[in-house]
Length: 358
Ligand SMILES: Nc1ncnc2c1ncn2[C@@H]1O[C@H](COP(=O)(O)OP(=O)(O)O)[C@@H](O)[C@H]1O
Ligand SMILES: [Mg+2]
Figure 1 (cartoon, helix red, strand yellow):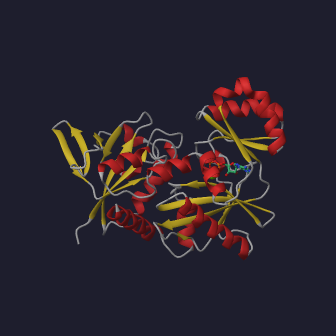
Figure 2 (cartoon, rainbow, N blue to C red):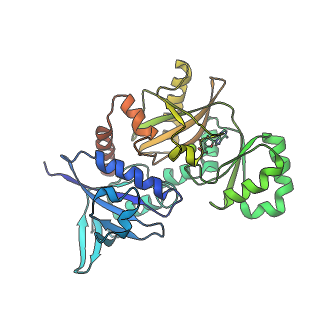
Figure 3 (cartoon, protein in one colour):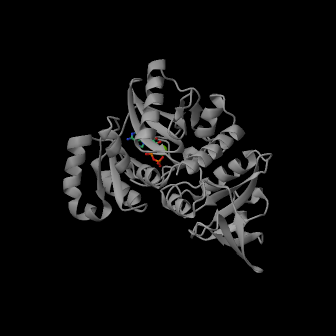
């Protein structure tokens, strides 16, 4: 059988650019080479696209950007091309690909933008389509759609940053009345805990809002849930499955912030989570229900809080979950009997199946 050519996209114009490089390197190393050929496409922080054919070891720390082994390349929306167009010194050439795996986190990659481009190109791609990617990128939209489906989350409110200076007093009254301190202030559309702060007192609200506002226009404030943080991995298209095993995070800091996720190495993952069977089953069933409700495809990691060991509150869906060697998504499948390489194989098959349905 002829090998399929998979394009891995990494980097991107996102505050999670660095995480994406590490995730992509891990995906590249685990992709079963007997079945797949690889094309690496790096997107710089300022949004330039390159075909990179140097050693993959230069990807995680960003050295690839200084390499001579990169050629400007782009994905044209023209359906006749079926791949990338690379513009080297010898002129433009087409690089056909069978499937794209966008290993991009956060904005301009996980939010439906790249998915829209791929849909126009008519190339199969791993993961959620435009709508579900965009919905899951905005935590306020996610909460409101899920609450319609009877899926609970923490109490929340949201506002636009440009309304804060003038509307501060009203917002503060609402926070006090509806949520009560402590609260979490976060950008509605971000990831990797960038711009997320826990606020214990009203006096500290302004600074937290200012920080969240750096990430975008829409700001979310949630009651701080005192509970466990658990995560469930979902895989599939129209008949998605939850990982048999649910994982738990024990942050080393006050909450699971950026350093805790990627730098300090002090937070702990428990696989399986410390949950009674009934709560774990509820987490799994809710993860699948949320995935279906929001129209997800391929994969998503669905994150929850569990209060008092019983009350299950959905925190967020990550439509391109971390794939670094310490990431929960691949670990949960491994613990559920699906090794990393096989997981990648399943994801590509799901992408091809989904494309065939269109
Ligand atoms: N409402 C909340 N209650 C308790 N902890 C929270 C809440 N919201 C966020 N956190 C903490 O902040 C971390 C990052 O917030 P999250 O909403 O998951 O954003 P991100 O998309 O950046 O991961 C969570 O993993 C958790 O530790
Ligand atoms: Mg999170």
